[in-house]
Every structure is written in structure tokens, then in C-alpha cells.
Length: 131
Image 1 (tube, rainbow, N blue to C red):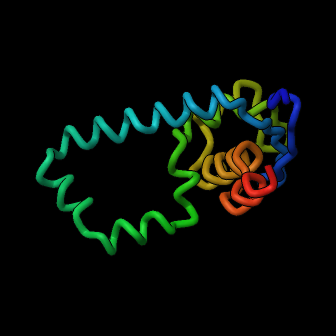
Image 2 (spheres, one colour):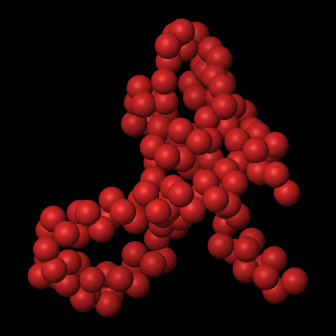
């Protein structure tokens, strides 16, 4: 019931990072931030260019089947800010912050937090059938 009580330790090289499950309202916030960034980008590139990206049905179908789509739904910085609890290890320094993570660690932790917070589509579909 209370998402913040669900935690998991993720190994990142020689370091251990404790992450937590995000609450529904936090996932919504991370999704809203992501959508706002996408809308900003769309406004910048213009409607003609956007139509060229979205008019190809084959490309659209491929994007919808992309297994990474679930991770792209949520703003990574928001997810990391809300989902990182603590870290320990030899690489950690006193003022370590989530915005100093390298790409590999940020991606790994973002995916781990989403995996903990959002059930995979197949699991969600099975749960819906059983309800």
C-alpha cells in the first residue's frame, strides 16, 4: 500500500545503492515532467517535422513494441531524485549527489527504480484478468 516502504539494494560497481519504489503520484509527476519536455521539443522543431516523425505507421508500430518504452515514459532526473535513498561504497564521497552520476550508473538506477515501481506490461495484464 505505501510505496516508500518497498526498497531494494542495487550494486553499481563496488558500490551499493538503496532505491525505493515510487508512489503513484510520484510516477505521475515524473511522467508529466517527461511529457512537458517532449512538448517543448516538439514546439521547437515545429509541426511539419513532427508530422514526418509520426506519420510513418511502421515506425510508430515499432516504437510501441519497444521494450524500453516503459523507461522513456518517466523523466530520469525526477525518478532518480525521488527514488534514491542512500549509497555506500569506495567511490562515494561526502557531498555525492544524484546529478553527478555517470550515464551508465544513472541509466542502471533509473531502470531499477522503474522496474521496482511499475509492473511489466504482461504482469499488469495478468493482474487485470484476475481481478
